[in-house]
Image 1 (cartoon, rainbow, N blue to C red):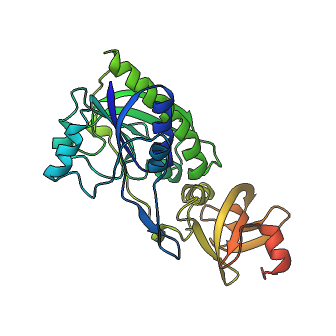
Image 2: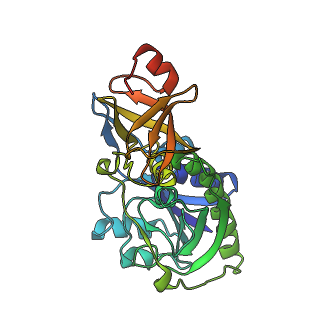
Length: 305
């Protein structure tokens, strides 16, 4: 079976690596164009392109899949199946119609919940107890195709979006290999999604970073871990702006206004929240500084409470 793979970031690279290791025939790899990054604006290849280069696979990086030339190039690869993981581009119906066995996608949520661009981060931001990955046949509507299989996992109460991404990456790679095998064997399930149960995971922005201390302790903790490692939660503490890398709940209660700095302990800086609870900032980063344990930072930069 000839597979064309489409993907861009690390989770997609892990999936491509697993297909290669499973002995699948990869007819071609599509990934987003190289992007300029950092101060020198040097072009950087995607994680998927790096894997494809090491495996000496044909690579295409079109700006669009909607012109005749790209459609012809894709047809020339003669794919039986197209596998998509976090490609970053919508596939038009003309592409979906090319492979006889269809186009499959691995999405990092338990569909139909959290369709869209940021399902992992939104699962953490929403304080969900579990999430997972879903294999589905692709439809023209975003993340709305029939489901093939799922893998579930609990979300740790202090697990960050970045940590969860790492775990889901492994699950996604396993699920894609299993899905390709089941399609090849003619045993893949096909379960329609219930659109009434659909929710959407919109892309994150830096406007979400300032911590809302008027929320409950849990909401504050979920905001910080859901925005890590990007765009990272921020807060002004003692007149200085910080990135907050880790905030944990405490059992303490207070009558102070939300955002009030209460105490600097051996664990971190305690802050009042909107539900009368107390959250503790245990790791932070000052502007222009490095990530540090909170007590270590304030030992050298005293703060008035």
